[in-house]
Length: 70
Image 1 (cartoon, helix red, strand yellow):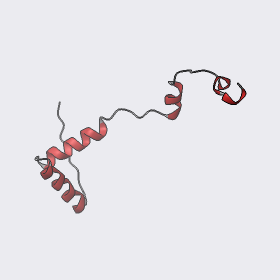
Image 2 (cartoon, rainbow, N blue to C red):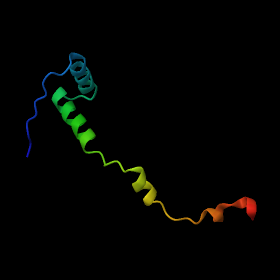
Image 3 (cartoon, rainbow, N blue to C red):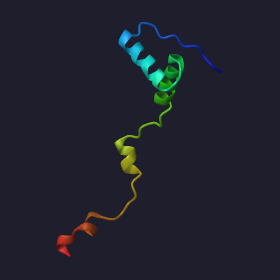
Image 4 (cartoon, rainbow, N blue to C red):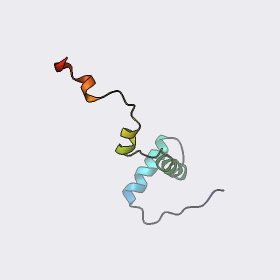
């Protein structure tokens, strides 16, 4: 279900930039605004460093990579 959204008190330079982007993409300012909101709000959730590190495969112990002692 679609919802109407009103944005008030937008700086003139921001509104002008929106209109210029819309013209460059061949769509209305309203359609450009929808696309910007969609692209920003539907991005995949960023993972924390801890989550990235915990998902790394176990590739051995530090000693396995010590080339100076072997």
